[in-house]
Amino acid sequence: MVIHVRGTRAMVVRPGGRPWEAELRRLSPGTHYHCRQLDALAEHIAYQQRGEQ
Image 1 (cartoon, helix red, strand yellow):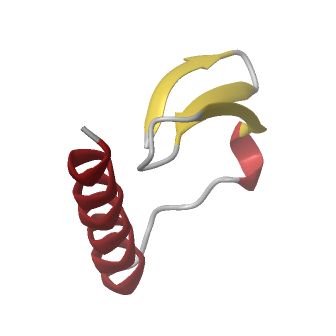
Image 2 (cartoon, rainbow, N blue to C red):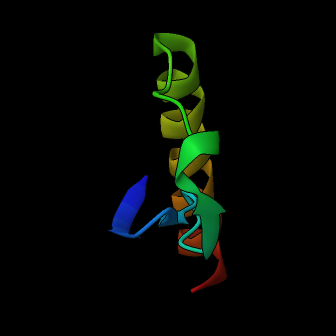
């Protein structure tokens, strides 16, 4: 998910919450498949974090 854009760079964040910077031109919209995979990954990470507490 893109959290902000500055010039030609975008700050994106992974489902686990780890941000990184990427070239804006290298990003593309996610397909339905990609969105399902990211949702499943976010759900898995949330499940893991609940187990640690």
